Image 1 (spheres, one colour):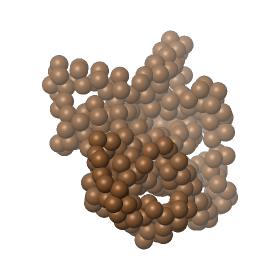
Image 2 (cartoon, rainbow, N blue to C red):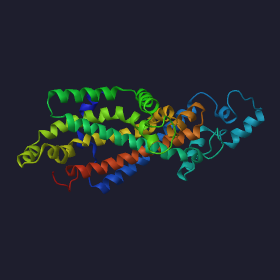
Image 3 (tube, rainbow, N blue to C red):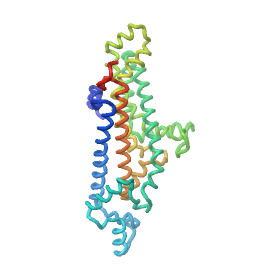
Image 4 (tube, helix red, strand yellow):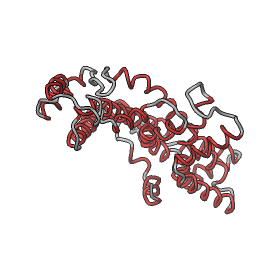
Length: 333
């Protein structure tokens, strides 16, 4: 994310919230969500269908298999691949409305049986990564903004450094230092909270750099507002002013960024899942793309889009809780 885009985000935080009450916002968002889900599924379906290669090859065991023409014809009819692409598309949408994601080309079982157990590990990983990112970002903001040129400059430098780190490099370094060398955490696997800490941190550190940058800018603006000066005049301590007054307004751009971040974390979790040998949707998606398993690919894309939409809904409501000025019935803080 460029510096220019971060500045734009922090400059107009309140415009992202849809005008109206929380109920109207949820209704509008829900209607828009259906369109977004349809667009995501439709685009993915036709891109995969137009990609060179025959799905029958994957269904019948890969490029090394040599099935007879009768077998190919029978399997093509069984999976409906002998129909025009538009008919296949409409059939897929109809099944999707009933919760049927189809049958995996590779595993020959319903898709939900494959990806169902992978959903919770990925959501746990993305959720804890977001929590870690916010903790790190808020620590930098509260401890360095307005604390003098040296601390402020150091905070900015560390934030840029964190934001520039590749997730896979952070994951490898964390595994080498804290798992292999110090032995504080498991090297790999999915065995409890301890096995989740390092994978989550590998995703959280770069994200914390982005969140801290947008939060820092709005926190500086909040500290210069009259209501902060008034709070100081009433004798509140600097810590109380920062946490109870300035921080409330400073986190709004970060909330907007978090909505994007959750969708990004779910889709990019494959980095941590591969490095730390964890199950998850990311690994399922990569394996499905490599093996041309279209039903699993479409299902994972649908779930990622659904998570992104749900988080945006939650953030839109949180906007009104944090800053009542975005609600016509609210009052200024």
